[in-house]
Image 1 (cartoon, rainbow, N blue to C red):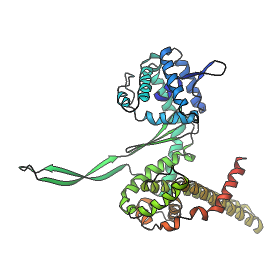
Image 2: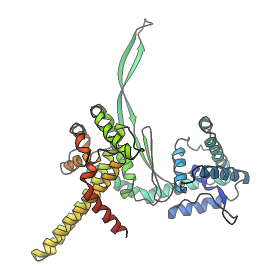
Image 3: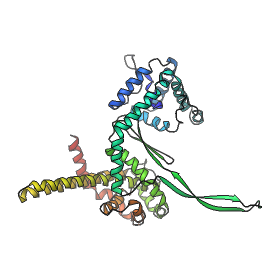
Image 4: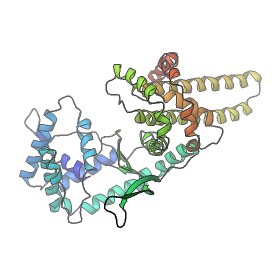
Length: 406
């Protein structure tokens, strides 16, 4: 909040020489209200401080002429989570460590620290926090529960909130200067997933950060989490420890997965060559697409059954069944398109894991207990032509998207 509030202070001159906000990120309705309150509270901000921030933002934008305002803001959201929390005294104590990495970043952090020290901001900080908390309770809590429930019910699993690993330690043998004793001990780390409402986040944009064992989904306040990219952030939180636990089995497939990734990198150099990341992203993409299709088809089937009971003739009943089959085909096509998009972005096992999850949907087996079998059953030679095999389904799904949009 404090980082984005600092960006909101920046001003620029328009073509008519009038002073306007330097960044015009589109915000949600709640975000616009908060922006108005923030602007009102910071009207008396020292002129030299506002000028410094404005110059910083102007230079930052000039260095990225093709970036939109939303794209300008995104890295600052990420940077905010590397800063220490705002102390009660409203002073930033640790920004000096950033000076060793980036002089510009240090200057920005210094400006942020000064804003925190001003009465206009510090005096209203508790009110700002209260607004964020109310938004979290009123806007996001219910949809977050729905999202988590839907995904975990589909996977028949529970998230791993603690991860235990073996650590090798060495100690000096008593009475000996050369001999060391080695032993292994288990250490547990807590894993946490946070959904953070951000009033000043660009509307429709979701930022996902993974810092150590903490996962953050930073979302605008009016986000419906049950149908947003936050789903994938949570799935990443669920699947990462499963991939790590099965890393030795994945290692045996590393050369073949690397070949698939290298082929993708020929057309998309932004694809990561990391094999384990490819496995994790493939699982996320597969679970996201399959859960959505499964839920849509389940609801449509239940409605069709009720509808059939109201029909009197066989012809009417067959018409309902035909409509259901048409809906199922459209849902399958959309899944194929989603998997294709993920495949092109480096999730080269997305189709494979989608097939595996489809087989588990009605079994009730925990995906965690099935993960090793899923990995060991992998045949990477079947994954090379997935895009060609799904070409027709992708065309139909693209056409359906265009029709829906129109």
